[in-house]
Length: 180
Length: 92
Ligand code: SF4
Image (tube, rainbow over the protein chains, first blue to last red):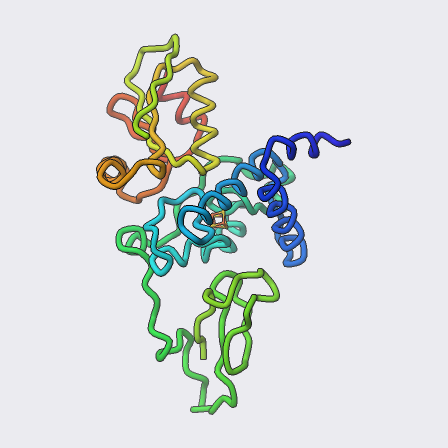
């Protein structure tokens, strides 16, 4: 038995199960969970708690409005994760971290909040699906399919509707926006 | 759930922590205060109900308009986020 298994024993089975799922999905998508297993299991425990109290994986480190539409940008993984991992070596909660972070090359402490102030004050507001978020294609090119963008990782899919789950970051359908 | 008092030998400052129960950096801040033996109180705002939650989050927003946690008040100083060097310096 490894030390890691001992830490797992102090958490509920659903927390441990979700931890392993997120760990597997992270690796598949080219992300890393924080290797401090106790710290990470506590955050996953927070996700499980938030699923129970709000009905979605509200970011464990941000105060929820408690309405999914207002919190959608900070449902885990949040729209700010990738930029934070690149710039600071960790997402806001330090659930997801970079190779540099794991190698101890960046300070392991809180990072600034990237979520825009207006969303913090009033909740997320999305451009209506009728207006695609991207620029119109050059030369008035007509696309045979609309293009959907995963707001968590930037994955693009040209098809009638967004995929059920993002194949890169495993974000669900409701995290996609009409891009073109 | 309201404020929780944590007794400590070090009573030099008035120390109040606004936190979220599920946030890892909030937990690290709580641990640091205990390690340093700091007499303080903390509240997990997400565990409070209705009016109390509203009142406490408004208070935290007065101290830190950006709205992120943890918010640590050491006398008149406000430290946002888990930053052990800054926290130790404020507690000195
Ligand atoms: S990815 Fe975003 S939502 Fe998820 S834990 Fe990190 S900061 Fe919170």
